[in-house]
Image (tube, rainbow, N blue to C red; front, side, top):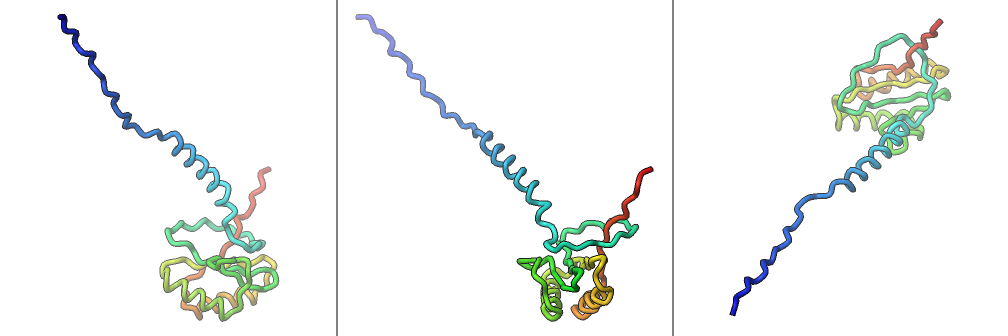
Amino acid sequence: MAMHPSPVRYRKKRLAEINVVPYIDVMLVLLVIFMITAPLLTEGVNVNLPQAATKALEQTDDKPIVVSVDVKGAFYLNTETSPETPLDANTLVNRIVAMRRLHPKSAVYVRGDEDASYGQVITVMALLQKAGVNNVGLITRPIKVSSK
């Protein structure tokens, strides 16, 4: 009797590679969504800013506190859940005090409409001083340079 060697069985090795193509697809979709929505997440109040020849400020890690004054003299705060809802003076001061306790290094800016009453902008600055804010920045638009 002749002995036939038994056939050698090869065990299939498990494939230990991760398929990253679906992850890349998901990340690209998220990137596109964030690129589209990021410009829409700016201030909720439409304010016609005055123009001034100034340089841009340095960006910090903390989100700045921005108080807006519209043409009617209403006050708005960008840190609210609905920043397009006007606030009265006492609520504005209380919210700013609370925000400054949470983020003491946050910069505070005033966005006054170009046609807003000067008195209303000064009132906001006095309210900010009452809230303990010593340094306030004013937001303006850069002057448009016409090319000839």
